[in-house]
Image (cartoon, rainbow, N blue to C red; front, side, top):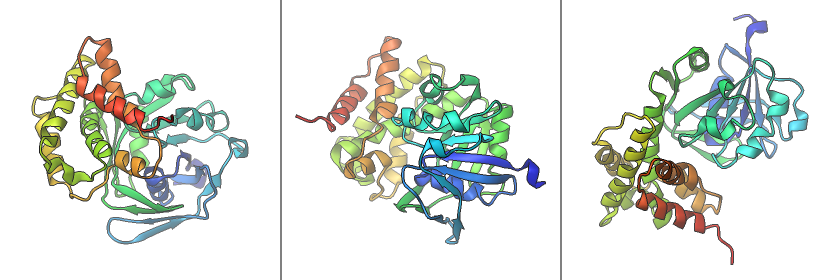
Length: 300
């Protein structure tokens, strides 16, 4: 690909997901400059890949929106779902007339979160499943290949093309709401780990599997109300996934609580309560989880 046609990419939020994606894109012949928009300086990215090899890259790192000198072709937002305002502060310099924004976050409100800051038709929502852990500043363990899924269309096709030279499986779907709500079913049930302070094996404790099923049943009811095609077997599927996962696995919600960081409880459980209320659907289990998780940040 001629150098002049290579794409410029900015990744806002170079944590485990953002850093992994930035490292792989830095190897793509389709991509020219990769810019990391970070809170703190990084000397380089070092990612241990699923096959044990290591990707080392030296992307441009900026720590202030004032350091942006020109717009890019793609802005990939990989911050936590509650960090929208801080992420959007980068748009003034990064977003030009043809820039597209991909939102790689949890939940089902990718477009709604950023619509106040950029035209919705510029936004590509992304469902991400990339098992990766940040082990230090700019250091990431990418455990398994993973997937990214986007809505079908020209923007989706162009986004998928970015990953042609990586091990991350990128694809489009004609039914993005169903994909997003299926992922939300997994995420909402993960609240039990943050509430109990226990890793994945807690699903085997008395009553926990039934609690998870109840949370997912509420998610299914609300998801169907907004147009997702969710089967009756989804609660059992979520529990089976939990049962077959490593018992010492730590999801991001639990990881954030253990580290004393803010948690994405609203994107995982609160959204089910809010949209359920809009559609007249009771969601008492998710409401209780959201209330308890929100209270962990309370100060007397």
